[in-house]
Image (cartoon, rainbow, N blue to C red; front, side, top):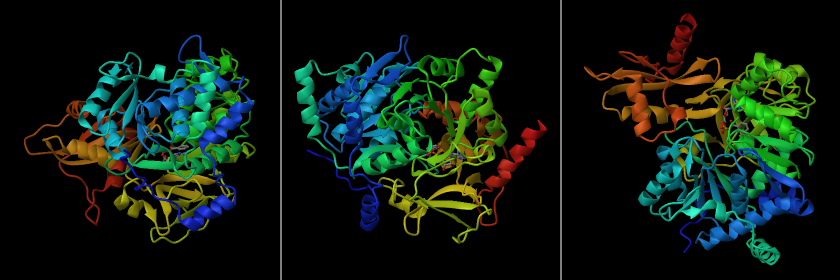
Length: 560
Ligand code: OOB
């Protein structure tokens, strides 16, 4: 019995969708269909390298797609159906890639959770997506993901299957076995035929991404095969990605950036090679660039900075001559850091200002150094529409900062099952307001100057202020709470909470962090600084004046 319908997915208006198809922006083919065509032409070439283990696991295109097809059938054998949701929380490794491809082929929709997520996030994501299965590592970095998955399955009626990478317990499914290749050639052929016949609708969701979120809890972003393929192809073109390229994925692959901008999917779609590492730690990453002849990779500014510093401290230890492009995005790259990346790592920097909700901007490889080092680039697709608005909704000329709004062939028109929030985030005729304040230069490049959304960007990981505040309010002793960013040398921003305690009560940073831990909140959202105050400043319209609070922190940080 299919318990789910597609309601909750906001479609593009019919005429707009027809225009995108007619123009060829949407190919009317699934990601599986596109990738299998490439794989068939390159069956014996290495597609996937997992460098988490020594020696690295290597897989050809032929083996990768055979495993994915076998896994697709095994997902259905478990009782999953096309359009059912599978919550995926796996570290970077070949298993993440093959399972994702199995989903694309079967029509089961992966919900891309982060390894850092804990009960607070996973429960929400599973409930909102009505996930019927969850895929987790067994124990990772001392955390027992399998035990948590069993707890969730006990509490959520839809969640029937726990898929585990590691030793399964309590009726869990062995993910490694699920991802095994077909037994022999005959099995391989019948598997292929059976999965070819499934043929999901290219207009249906290929995956659900998680929003950075400015409201209470993260939203789900439905990305269709048509729109996501458009996203991958347009971003691949801006870094000249081709079959000779070797893409290193070290950022968590469930993020849009390393997954599809052009990322893992881009490298495979052009017949290149993907190398997966579960962490962007500099020594390991640079050693892998040398060992695998990596040509393209992606980093958040903090990671790029760590690679640069490591390289400067250990010049010439690794041969990085293959590295052609390092993409950097997710949070603002300071211009002064930007200028060091190309010379130190011996590659071209590509700045990327993107969002899981769609629009991707990049600098182009042939841009002058000045543009590469001091702008966040321009839209990757000719059909991307971008406007920069003043507070009254009027278009602003070049050179004047305003709020960016966007529409386009890979920017969905709404979050999944969030009508109230959609009414605010999608203005007028489906323009997505990302909450970023940008300036457009006469050369078309955008410079991100700030934000008018209540979010903390901690080294590329987004933290909703409201989510943090709601959690602190569940502590008895807190009377008033405001979460704000504080400037940080390494991560750009960290999370600070201002708290007015109730009369006679005590609040400490340790108590807050303990409370977040006990509430099963991902560690990157735990406050890192507490400012105890007797009152919070208010604006004229009676809202907490966060700008004033942030300014106080700048002053105290500068003075300390
Ligand atoms: C990427 O996606 P999300 O969904 O995690 O976060 C989107 C937000 C943007 O609205 C903006 O506030 C911020 O992250 N952001 C940047 C930035 N890139 C993203 N702010 C300043 N400078 C940049 N270069 O972060 C994302 C998705 C795809 C590709 C790259 C990044």
